[in-house]
Amino acid sequence: MRISVPAKAVITMHDRDIEQRVHDFKEVDGGMTSGEATLEAERCLQCKKPLCMKGCPVGIDIPAFIREIASGNFQKAAAIIKEQNMLPAICGRVCPQEVQCEEQCILGVREKPISIGELERFVADTERAHGMVPPQKKTSTGRKVAVVGAGPAGLTASAELARMGYHVTLFESLHAAGGVLMYGIPAFRLPKDIVKAEIAAVLTLGVELKLNHLVGRSITVKELLSYDAVFLGTGAGLPYFMGLPGENLPGVYSANEFLTRVNLMHADQFPLFDTPIKKGSRVVVAGGGNVAMDAARVARRLGGKVTLVYRRREEDLPAREAETRRAKEEGIEFVLCANPVKILGDQGITGVECVRMEMCAPDQSGRPEPAPIEGSHFTIDADVFIAAIGQGPNPLLISEIPELKRGKRGNVVVDSEFHTLMRKVFAGGDVATGAATVILAMGAAKSAAKAMDRMLREE
Image 1 (tube, rainbow, N blue to C red):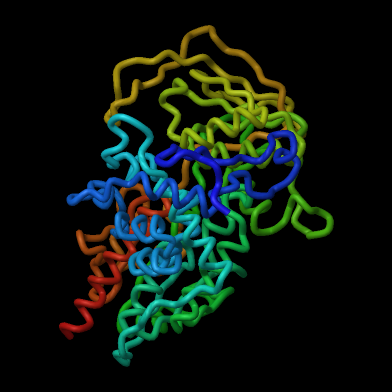
Image 2: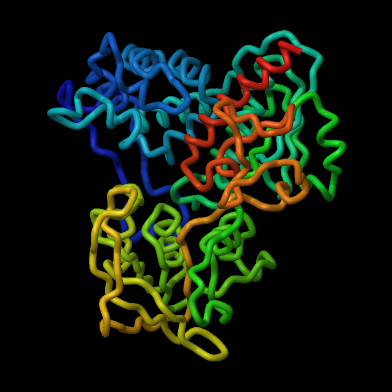
């Protein structure tokens, strides 16, 4: 049944009721109906030179799949997307389209740009409900490729290489595939059954997944290097801390540990699952990115009164605008232009001492550099502190292969084709660039897979 919305209307997304969603981990964004998706697709101008495609790191033919939605051909739209992206339901939910493809949309000059991310999500969800169709594969090359890390980069590289005709073995150190998609992003933003379904679609291409396999321990580096080519996609698993007095107190977490315990290890359901976490009655989260918003919103759902402390202004928050809005709606208190300087307590946390910040000259990124204001210290009562200030490349595998060149931040150094200094070893995603977005990791993996294919075919 077609909904009663005027043609060319701008569709507003549907978030669940605030009072309901803060008590569970069900998805907040309700997505589009088929009628809404069709009407939104009809707004597309079908530009002869589509700028939106320039903003897509994985090169999806955006006008083509939107044209199929407008015609009601949802299955064809899904096939077009999956020519370039095997994780469309994931990307439709977590990619920052507003600063990528949607930012380039010509409609955005005078009105709201096309909701490309929501349309991608709609298409992927519709296909999943009616049976997912795997894309075509090329004839087997007889060559074997190893991929290390089953996060966004590893899954994308595996899918691309399998479609090119390679036998791919995907090694994952944890007991579940997905990487940050499983342990980092909360279920209310990215339901885990959707992640599992899209991983399963990658495996239907013939990818062999080996869980609980830590390279250097479960298999040797020598065994890894016996493959014809290797892709390293081990992500950014090294959390950063602030170096504050009191950081060793019980109740202090990195956002990485906090989210992993809740998302992957079910700490929110202790003692049903034997992974405990301290459910704070008053929680302070330091940071202003998407991970900080995720940690704050999870802590809120665990029953805590949550304060987010960020050292810059609201307009400087690096988190997506929608996630910042939802955090505020859910009762997260924002303390801006402030920074933690000390965690107070003896046997446990009693509070967090902060200092007010003033904005000075712009830094290299163009944002004003914050500086502490003398004599402006204040205290926030707290029994849990979560540091969400970023993380670096996972050092476990890198340390096992000394031939790899590392950058100043511990990242694997690669060239423009994501080739390391080792002849048949490539790397992409957060392990090479440091922590970034899911879609940028996927774009790097696609480029690396093409380079690996060129190398192997030249041989």
